[in-house]
Every structure is written in C-alpha cells, then in structure tokens.
Image (tube, rainbow, N blue to C red; front, side, top):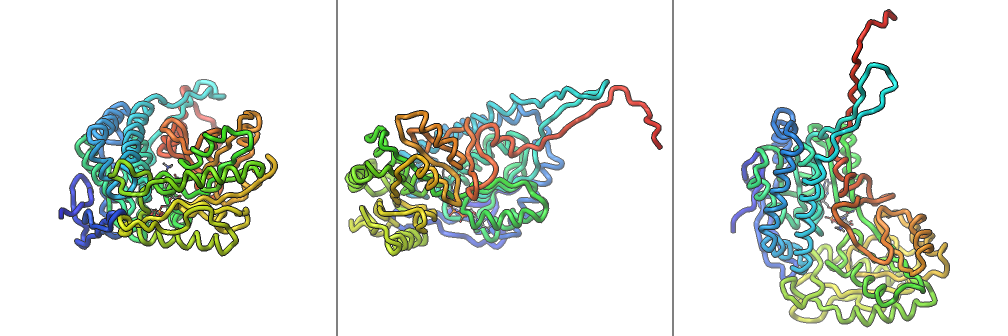
Amino acid sequence: MDIKQNFIDGKWVNSISNKTRSIINPFNQEVIAQVAESDETDAQHAIAAARKAFDTGDWPRLSTAERSKIVRTIAELIERDKEELARLESLDTGKTVEESRWDMDDIAGVFHYYADIADKDGGEIIDSPIPNSISKVVKEPVGVCGQITPWNYPLLQASWKLAPALVSGNTVIMKPSEITPLTTVKVFELIEEAGVPNGVANLVLGAGDTVGAELSKNEYVDLISFTGGIETGKKIMQSASINMKKIALELGGKNPNIIFADADLETAVDQALNAVFFHAGQICSAGTRILVEESIHDMFVDALVKRVENIKLGSGFDEATQMGPLISQEHLNKVIDYVEMGIEEGATVAAGAKRPENPELLKGFFYLPTILTNCTTNMNVVQNEGFGPVITVEKFNTEEEAIKFANDSIYGLSGGVWTKDIAKAERCVANMRMGTVWINDFNIYFPHAPWGGFKQSGNGRELGRLGLEEYQETKHVFQNLNPEPINWF
Ligand SMILES: NC(=O)c1ccc[n+]([C@@H]2O[C@H](COP(=O)([O-])OP(=O)(O)OC[C@H]3O[C@@H](n4cnc5c(N)ncnc54)[C@H](O)[C@@H]3O)[C@@H](O)[C@H]2O)c1
Ligand SMILES: C[N+](C)(C)CC=O
C-alpha cells in the first residue's frame, strides 16, 4: 500500500521519522490507507517553507486576479474529480456517497466563490479631514496561516480555509484530522496540478498534540484557523497568545430546534430528522436539541419515532443506506456513555439508545438513531454536545420560555424556529444568541453567507466576505501632498 505523504515546499515527502498511521474504514474496520505520521519537526519544515514563500516569493505579490485564476482552476479540478473525491470521502468517513457528492459540489462552489469575489474589493478612499492629503485603506494578506480541520467534514472544512487564504495571498500549512485525511491529500495533488507555487500550500499529516500544537505555538505562524472541539479550541487560543497570532475558531454546538404548535408539522417533523441524522449526527450544527410546544409534544414525538424506526443504516456505498456508522470505536464509546448519562439523569428512551443487532453492521461503528424525551434544560445530556445520532426533547409553553431555554447553553452556533407566524419567528431570531438561525428550515449553509459561533462556539467567521477578511490585514495609507516643516522642536 502506498504511503500518503506530506506536501512541503512543492515536494511529496515521508515524515522525517518515517512513521506511518493506518486509516480505518468505519463501516468494517478495514485498513484503507497508510499515511505519514508527522511530528513537530515536520511541521517546522513546512512552516519554514511557508514563511519563505510569503516573505520572498511571488504569491503574495501577484495581482488578486492572477491568484483568482489559479483558485478557479482548483475548483474546476475538484469538479473534474468529483466522483473520485466523493467516494474517497465516504470510504474515510462512512457517510453516504450521495452526501459526499453534495459536499464536493459545495467545496468546488467555495473555491469558485472566493475566486469570483476576491478582486472585487480594492480597498477604500477615506475622505481625509486633513487638506492636501490622500487617505486610503488597503487589504493585504496576513502571512503564514496554520489551518487545522476536524474529521467529520474533512474536505468541506478544509475548503472554507484554503480558498480564502490562498486567494488573498497568504501561504498555508494545512493539518487535516489524523482520522480522515484522504480527500485533503487528494486536493493537495490538485493544488499542485493547478500551479500553486512551491511553499505556498503545505500539507502536514499527523496528530493534534504534535503537528497541531506546533502550528498553534510556532512564532513564525501569523494566523491559526481551527475547526474542532471546544477543549482543543481553548488550548489553541492559549498557544496562539505566544506571538499574538490572529485566531479563528469554529467550535461545537448543541443546537436548539424550536417547534411551535402553529408550524407546518409534517415539514417540521421531516426536517427535524434531517437536522440530526445526516452523517449520523456528527455535524457541529445538528439540531439535536428539540424544544417543542407542550400542546403538540406527544403527537410530534410519536411522528418522529415512527420515522426514526425506518431509517436504513448501512454502507455509505449502498444506495439504500440513509445513515452510516460513527467515525471510530472511541467516538462510539463516547456516544454510548452520553446516552447512558441521559438515562441516568432521568431521560426516557423513545427510540434507539443501543447498537443495531443486524449482523451485517456489527463490524462497523453503528449506533441506532435515538430519541430521548422528558429532558430538561439543566440536564448534562441537554447541555453537552453528543455529536451522534441522538435527539433530546424538551417541552415549553410560551415564546419567552422557548427563547430562555434555547439560550441556556454555553454554545451559540446555530438554531431553528418553526412557525407560520413570521412576526413570532422574527422575535425569536432577534433574541436567539447564535451565529446562524434558520426560520422554517435547518442546516442550510452556502459560500455567500458567513458561518460561525456566538459564545463558546467560537470566534471569527468562515464563508462570505467575512471569511475572506479573516485572512486579510487592513492597512491605512496616508499621503501628505504638500509636506512642510512644522517647526515645533
Ligand atoms: N463550528 C464548525 O463549523 C464545526 C465544524 C465541524 C466540526 N466542528 C466541531 O468539531 C468537533 C469534532 O471534531 P474533532 O473530534 O475532530 O475535534 P478535535 O478538537 O478533537 O480535533 C480537531 C482537530 O484538532 C486537532 N487537535 C487536537 N488536539 C490539538 C491540539 N492540542 N493542538 C492543535 N490541534 C489539535 C486534531 O488533530 C484535529 O485535526 C465537534 O465539537 C464539532 O462540533 C465544528
Ligand atoms: C459546518 N458544517 C455544517 C458544514 C459542518 C459541521 O460540522
């Protein structure tokens, strides 16, 4: 089996230690690849290459239009290789190939979007209060960017970082999750094919506490962009303070989905399932916290349970499959413990709460779609992110109560409101402390709109114009057109 290597300074190389890691298919635990297992020294080599490319190379000095052309080529190459990338993503993550195909369309769309918008903002002329002067604001790249991604949407999260960073003239070191690096490796082949100069885009494969920690603390890195869990985010924030790196953190969520009695209930039930069970609930913005108006609670739960029992689990490569496995044994154990905790706290199992018995699924890390009722806001199972196919259901009686419960969380990533009363929906939205709120929908994201969290769900934004600005410094340039001595001293 070939070893998937690091890409440093335009060359594919083994880790210096020559160590490798096996990548496991979560559907059957088979080894699907061997990848380089790098450490701090490999990261330092990549940082040195990125530093040199930024400080002395052409990339930051090209016109934005020239960089946009190359970024657009990356988008086109992703479109060309969409099917290969989608199948690789499913092999690595266990998600259905159909979901992976949607991801690949989104990913190509992100590269297209940033290629399209990057040269549309050439800065700003300020109306200077000082006579005979010119005052202007220009945007420049930040410098060397460390980028760290999670295992659940490996290439999608990488694209949200790579496309804006590259188009605005930065150089990067990408560290994908050590569990699911395969599509990121493939996209670095496409980055090479597109003609990105040596040292501009570097890839280092390895663990978080070695490669990731080095990127976070190294003084030659100017910005760190991280997507992952809160506890890791806190460590990165601390390390980044060493040289006052800019930081962008996209962290977890326990996202409320508020269902009022006057909602279109057939659609609300259907979408509440989509909001959670895509990718087995391993989505930062999964609507795993259902808040339902008491008058429709029993009917709503019954409708959910009936649908949940029919969800077809299986291989992501089987067209009939609706939900794949969890990512790893370690993560499966966490989800099992999370549900046990909920039951011990007094939640009632309305569906699932165990592994499937189908012998064909026993080798995979499967867990049944689960619904826990009789939950209350103070329970750990409601407050903590489970990151699995598990819904907790709470009741509310008034609009005020719904908002109060929804906001009672350390998280603030996303939420949804279902009602036909648009004034009520807007009142809720205005009071919900989350980076994204959907009205009569859930889990919608696209390149044009910003994505990010309030509270402990993170800081900074990805996607949209704000996602580009994360990778730009702002410089004020003042020019005196009539310099004369002041004669103060
Ligand atoms: N807000 C978002 O947009 C978003 C999107 C996807 C996932 N997430 C969150 O990601 C989490 C799941 O992903 P995960 O389990 O891969 O998260 P994680 O925090 O364990 O790991 C994320 C990445 O950080 C690296 N890492 C681990 N320790 C590190 C350290 N000390 N220093 C630097 N890097 C380190 C890992 O190797 C991995 O590449 C969930 O909480 C989920 O909500 C958030
Ligand atoms: C940001 N998103 C929704 C694509 C993936 C979160 O895990």
